[in-house]
Image (cartoon, rainbow, N blue to C red):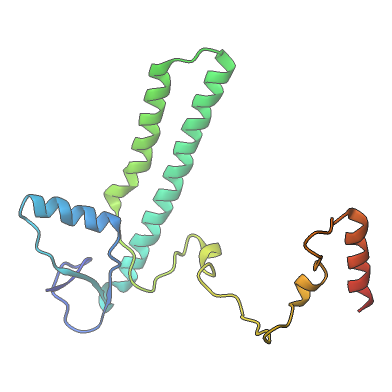
Length: 172
């Protein structure tokens, strides 16, 4: 059955599929072990799309701030250890547990991503999966970038020979 994750009703019309990620798989596995899994197909209906985007942005922002907070706890822990010169196992263990707890807190407000949705919080990652433009090279042709560094297998490349290659490239 197709169910909207926001309004928890059966889908009647257009909807966007939810990405099946690790957290959803873990939750389904836990529910299967207790025999309470419904195994619904998860979607976001058109009416709730805006609300889902707001919740997802809030979740991503919470994860970001929690990561920063956990990093600050770790830095303070390291600074304390270095400044005092005493390595206390209990202090290190409690600091790491606190940092882990801080990172886990945003998972209580988890909102899964939908298919085709890019992260609004990290715009630098948008172009990561895009392919670089391909350049076609005829068979037997040496690319220009490699041409200047083409050296015989047994010869030794020195600083002087590199400069000669650069001068040859500039004169072309």
